[in-house]
Image 1 (cartoon, rainbow, N blue to C red):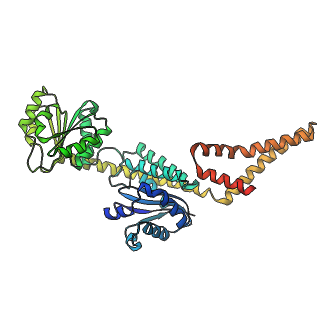
Image 2 (cartoon, rainbow, N blue to C red; image 1 turned 90 degrees about the vertical axis):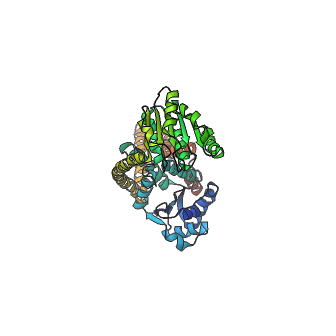
Image 3 (cartoon, one colour; image 1 turned 60 degrees about the vertical axis):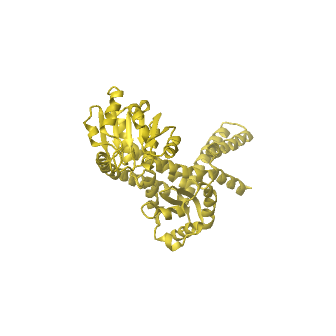
Length: 416
């Protein structure tokens, strides 16, 4: 029996190919069933995000069989897929899953979203009774490892994207963004990503100004913001504590005079302006104004470069944690050898029986009636032998662990 990890990601495949092998939520139920039936694996989890599609399996399959299944399911030539797929077995598969869950294999090193995506994939597979004792333990162990990586290293600390760096800078200057008014100038992809980060930090007053009101409304509606046109900038600026601009304009659209007028109306309350555009949206002379703090994309890139170096150093520390935990999990896996399990189970059962037999002999020696001693012995043995299975069945029922319940049902069926 082998643990497999196989898939494609942003490093090995183009967006077009990743789109071809992605699984929609509607496909996952059928796909999990088909994967287990057609490849002879006992357990399976399918992870499908915009940056990766991966199969995690446990059973008597082969890498070639899994590649063939993935290609066939999506109607892709197997040779095409083979050029872009990666595969790992056993210890290397364990290590890969732990790296993925910890954000070490992500497009943005250390990003936290993948942890939730891995957990969601596992929970869906568990709900479909597609994970059993091995993958159940492996994924739970990987989640603990990912949390250790987060708490014991700085791999997820500091900003490594322009959008997040901008929001993080705003948080450093305005400690509580919930009380601040943020003005986004432009409504493209960068502005939308900035808006997502702002929402995560609880910004309640968000203004979106764009050349076309329709696009401003499209972004503002997603984040409970207010849509405006660029023509309204003179009226909007005095209300903005933070201005983040990212338009495609070839000329600056926010000049020194416009900001100076806004500061006067604000009674010189500080204003943070972050220019993410190239060419610039905000005149450099704005920096000459008291109480106006202007940062450009070049300023942020310097911060991002430093942060990336810090994350890369932390990733090396994280890898040491993962390597140690692979050893721990592999030791547990080796302990599952069926001969050892049978021997330990038999030894424990015989010890329990011998303990109760000694007690029964003492009762007989003390003159207790034999029929009472035998009745009590039978009851005590039954209680002892059923204690652990009863506890496991109750826990499995409470947690909806259908795989474990299925095992006990099979045992019950075999006894009849």
